[in-house]
Each structure stands twice: as structure tokens, then as C-alpha cells.
Length: 209
Ligand code: SF4
Image (cartoon, rainbow, N blue to C red; front, side, top):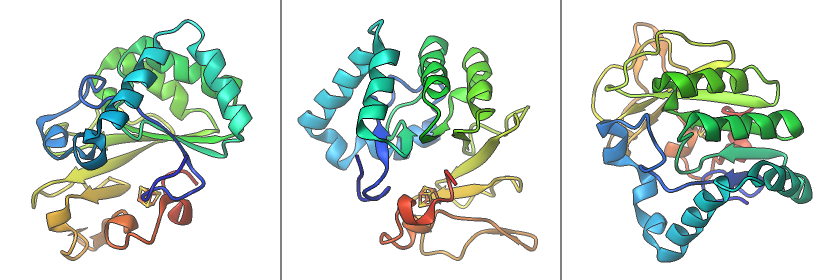
């Protein structure tokens, strides 16, 4: 529960990055926070590997729903690291969300690039309890189809121009002091935590409200 970015009141579920990211690009891999700092500690690596092992168990869904209820989760970020690695795994989360719709779930994913996983993500996005973000960057391009309920988050790592229809931008540290990017008269929304660390997700709520 909680970290510096999301604040104290949000629960997190993570998996090892890269190996569980079938929609990964060279852009996101190159700047992935889940390969740096505390994610390099053996204890964190072990914990994420343990989480991954749990996803392979037949009773993963039942145990996760019990855990969500027992902890009284109000907001759950699915994948503070890692992603929906397969259709079967995404279906497990779809089952959990349907079975246990009380918390607000939110996730960002590049697995929309894998058609068989995208079909499951679309079903999650249609749920009232879920806020779904497709992650984009200069390599992913724009999804051919943006299903109802899905919003777009763009990762900017250089001075490339993001697509106009995005709903949120994340920028690498080097770009964060620059003025907010605009396209024509439209000023693109950036994550406020990147400019002021005191604004946590719990305070901002943009991604899950
Ligand atoms: S926009 Fe707000 S809710 Fe979304 S990641 Fe940034 S701080 Fe968190």
C-alpha cells in the first residue's frame, strides 16, 4: 500500500518489468523507472518474482479478491511495474474486477498492441470500476481503435510532438522544466507529480476519478 508517487491510500500490484511487458517499445524500456533505483534492490526483485509466481496459481483470482476485501482497498493501481503479460492473465484481472467491483482499479498498459490481450482490456475498460489507460510513445503510434472508456497517456522522451488526442502526458526528467507542450491552442495535460512531488495520485486523482 502506498508509495511516494501515489500517496498513502492507494494499493499497488506489481510484476517484474520487461519480461511481463509484451507491448513494450524501445522507448519505454529505455526510460523504465521499474528497472532503476529501488527496483534494483534484491528484496524488491524477489517480491515481484513472488507476485509473478502467484499469478500462475489456480487460486490467484480467489486469493486476490480476498486480499482486496480484507485490506479494504479503495483504489488499486494494477501494475505499478509490469503489464498484462498474456490474455489468460488479463482475463484473471477481468474476473477479479467483476467479482469485486468496489475498489476503483486503474492501469496503464501497452499490451493493447497485442490484439488478443486488447480484447480483454476492452472489457475491463467497459467496467464502471475500472479506469483504463493505453500507453503510447513515439514508437507505438496511435491505436487503430480506441474502445469506450479508454484514455490515452503519452510518454515523451524527446522533443517529439505527441498526438493531439492524448489525455495525459508523462515526460522524462530532462523535459519536465520545459513549458507544458501545446498543439495549436491546446495545452496538453501533464502529470502534476512530475513538476511537484508533493502532488500525489491520491491528491490529484486524474487517472482514476
Ligand atoms: S496525473 Fe495525477 S493521478 Fe495520474 S499519475 Fe499523475 S499524479 Fe497520479
